[in-house]
Image (cartoon, rainbow, N blue to C red):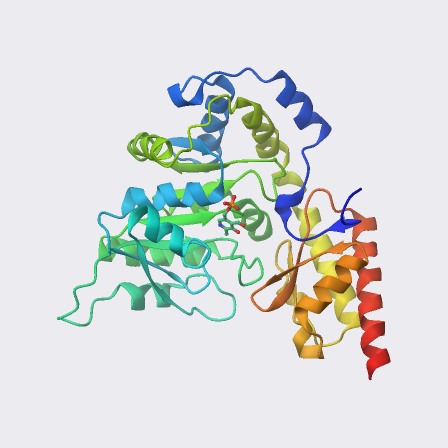
Length: 353
Ligand SMILES: Cc1ncc(COP(=O)(O)O)c(C=O)c1O
């Protein structure tokens, strides 16, 4: 039996569609260690085309995609990557970066929308102290910014950051796990964002709906070295064409339906605030993430998540809030179910008052 009637814990929980499963069953495969899986190669070519980069590399996870990318740019143990507080690379992947590549982070708070600003980038990379021996090798940015609620960095900001990076002689890596959500919300092609960075990664396993996989995109030279690092990190996954077949469908069909996830997320937020005034401002929902501040209305978040879970609604705890994420397997009925759950939560609060 399914654990939840509607699973909003993440956009990673979606199941492959019937057409994905059919393509996976029929996929032509080879051995990806040798670089001769034709379906993987097709996905990589398509990813390079879509992002406008010279080449791309298919890897099992977003974490591996980021870690390979960081290692491409960071030249020595103890060197720093400049990022925002809460950036996935500098929080969830902080210890991974330290263990795999000796990377440490220099971070700062860019304000409530969470994404890197030109102002913060400048303050992080500017070397004001003549006795300072820190070595910053890379500026890392993230779009959408997960920890801040799936917020969208405007391409103009990235252009301004590019200028600062150029002045400082630094490359930029974009953690674009959800760059297609950003692109749809901003009405800006993914290649416009990609043009401003040296490398980017994106996940087909999140909003785009594939079961597994992420792509590192960059120059041919980057990707040649990235392939070596993928093998080094244990990511040479043999007949991966079975997965890449689903990734190709996700990349073709996924982006055109993301606006539906964004609309449903906004409706979910509007429904929640009707039931629990003061718990969220629906205007802050820019893509597919809804962060409810239950503490602001006197509800402990973990207990709320447990209560929602008992009611068949999957949610998680992120940044001190109750997080829900819409995706391809959440339809209008799913949103109604979730709001029924929140109605019960709100009724419990009313009873206790
Ligand atoms: C912004 C961001 N980057 C990277 C990752 C890592 O992806 P994965 O879970 O596939 O390793 C995530 C995962 O949720 C993410 O949200």
